[in-house]
Every structure is written in structure tokens, then in C-alpha cells.
Image 1 (cartoon, rainbow, N blue to C red):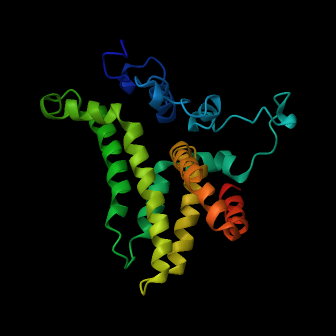
Image 2 (tube, one colour):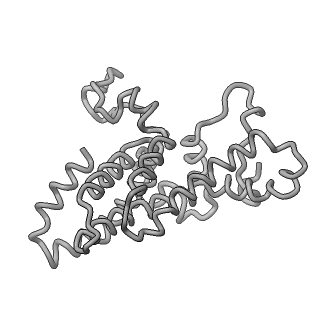
Image 3 (cartoon, one colour):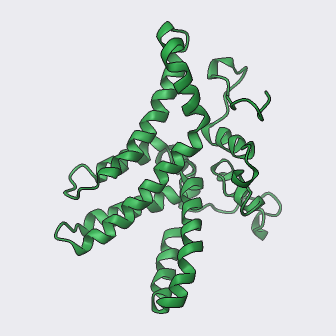
Length: 239
């Protein structure tokens, strides 16, 4: 395929001899083949950005002396196989996400955007898998599904931005009559889960890195007394 002039498209599962590449593998390939060099994966932080991609999340840290002879050290809770196969699944994460807002009284309308984004990705995969040979699909849905497939990273990044934005909005709402401390604690625990889960880690870590680059210098300059509590919160979030 000529990736310069054509959209990057992965064959369907039935077209592979063995098994199709995972969503994380497809996203990694898309990121490395972005036409604009300034938007390509690793354009900002080089190899470190590639190493933080969810595709490599299951690999041991070979910079750690305990792993230098391929002896994998005891993994943290977030790297346990049981966690990888169940908790880290996108479906489980967005079930939790939806549950948080079932009883909310806060008018957070854009909180539905991540649900729409993930539904769009899932419906597209379903249509491609089960209906791609039908007349209706070929005539009306093929181009739309190809567009969604080619822009999975963009859709996922939009979803992650909204998820983090909802977290900050819930904190601000603690100053209003509609405050809900339990909901805020539950939601930020979910954001921590998304920060570590392989299915969402790449997008969330990229956004948090961008926020830190912009906000940390301002905090150090204008409100230095917030450095200690923020460092404590950061250790909890990344731990």
C-alpha cells in the first residue's frame, strides 16, 4: 500500500491467515505512519513516546537491573494478567464510566461524548465484521466505516480529552450546591485506572504530559505552595 497517497486500512479478521493485529498494534502502526512528521508518533519525545504506547505495556522494563537477564520482576497490580484481561478491557472501563453518571445531578452534557466515541468504534467493527458483504453496507456504510477505521486514534484522543475534562469539572462542582464527594472520588479513581490500563494508557498519558508541560511552570511561578500537594497527588495517580 502507498501510505502517502492512500488511507491506511487494515484487512478484516477473515482476511488474515492467523490472527488479526490487536487494536493497540494497529494504533501503533497508524501512529508511526502519520503523513505529517510533526504529528507522527515519537515526533515530540522520541523513542520514549513509542515505549509508552499500550502495545508495549505488557513488556518488562529492561532498564531495571532486575530485568536485565529477562527475569521479569514481580509485576504491579496494574500488570497482573487478570487485570490485563478483565479490568483493562475497554468495555469494562466504559461500563464503569457510564455507571458513574447514571445518578448524577450535575449538567455535564459533554460527558456523553466518550460513550458516543466508543460506541462509534464498536459499531464500526461490528458492521465491518458481519455486514461488509451486504448491499446496504457497500452502498451507504463502507466509506463511513473506512473513515472511522482510519481515524481511530483521533476518536480515542477526543474521548480521552473529554474524560479528563469531566474530572476537572467535577472538582469545580464541589464549590456548587450540586457537589458530590463520593462521585468525585470514584471518578478520579476511574481516571487513574484509565491512566494505567493498556487500552487507554497511551491517550491519557499523552494528555497528562501536555497538561503538565503547560501548567507546572505556572504553578511553580505563581502558586509554589501547591507543589507539595500536587506532587503527592501525582504519586498517588501514577502509583
